[in-house]
Length: 144
Image (cartoon, rainbow, N blue to C red; front, side, top):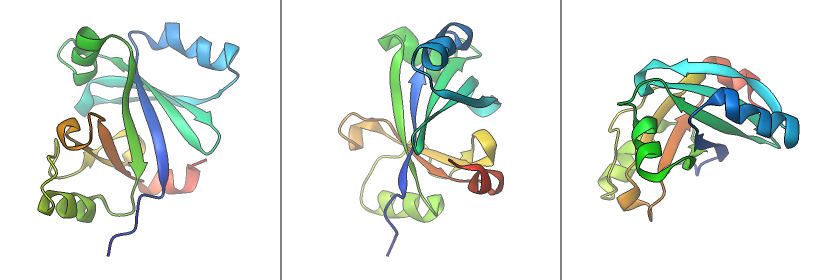
């Protein structure tokens, strides 16, 4: 039996510019900026902000053909996905596939901080883009 997701790992928010967006969350809302990263495979720059026991990820596209750029073009800036922390992304993906859930990624790939990530297709999840996130070795020790 699989363990249920442990928590909401983060909420991803698509933005046109981290430079313009981060000050709202830090200066006006008072959230703590944890740092920045670039995820080449997803063609995004990411800012991580702490909010309670979870995070916000602000996602800025680095290329016009990135998934985030396409999202912003179609829908504008805003909530892009919700990520659930899981202890075994491969087993979870295999289980969901067996149950008929449409997957965007059938195998996890490396995301920020060495995490293993995979997305579920919104057509199988009531219109919500869900990311499964298995913490990488460095992330397990640093998570808020």
